[in-house]
Image 1 (cartoon, rainbow, N blue to C red):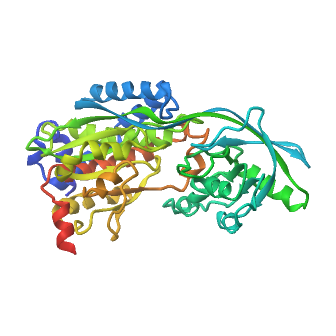
Image 2 (cartoon, rainbow, N blue to C red; image 1 turned 45 degrees about the horizontal axis):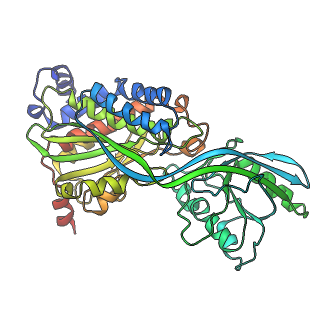
Length: 461
């Protein structure tokens, strides 16, 4: 087997991809990916040349043009820009401080869809709760005139489940506080770090609830407020927050293709999201995902003959504040039946430690070929089928497209994401390359085979 792999690696430049053994070519591509600098170069380019990219900002327009130029430069064809409208919330000046009984500054970041404070700010006593459930147990009117504070802690996990477990504290907490009469809302950052850097993020639309100013506290500042409140004296906080928002800002999905050689209308859709929050440079969230999927497709595109099916990379233009996934699914609704598979990289740059395949597909020769490439990468295929794929591709999955989950090690991801620490230096080049290797082996085995995930799932019922 070693001699076969070595021969495949040396003959990639002259042997047609479709004539090579699927397993051997996948392994050769894997090894090439581990030494390829494309992903790092793409991530460096995006974070250095564009920086933070909130939806509705001038930087997002520059990111659109960057995406088009980058895909063309890397050899992609059929490069497209698809416009749509998305919500946009943009941050202005922000500050927070305890005014009594122990005056101190607090470190905050406003949450997406937060209302601005009145001119000159607002000052109120805090009502502190250790969990969102404690807040929700309060009757209507119980928080009238107060700034509600929720200090629930996030648990560090490899699979990111600690984030999902308390996500509602950020996304729904302010609405619940407003229902009970609160004039402001502060939540301990959904993060696993111990720095004084708060982590922002989006909230659910207010609906019929009166919008109030809402912000994330750094973890130490949440604990500071806990300590103050525990002393038994009323704690008063002053907030000053400015922002602008609109329901309909211009946004764009940018895509390019490695066109299939035999069945080009059968398409694998992958990608990451081009937008980001504003405190850092959007490196792990999600320049890394853009870089990983772009680099993987490019490596396959360098084969002397393209695989049977088309690989399409999409740089989704509005994930953080929502809109890109539904817009893409709606624009491509007539294509869903021809979409072979969808998947997204959006958990940072930690190694892919396990893969969830579509139901019933693990024993197919193509997936066996993929599995044979994984041991050197310390990645395994779990028994449970794929379920999600990523927020931008899930609308396509909901419409019937098969989906794959390539699970990254998220142990450190929530130290960084949505914070000022989300910067390029936090990406490990070796871990980034491992991602590209897993994605490349997977994409090749799907693209150069006739695997039918829909039929396999139906048979497995």
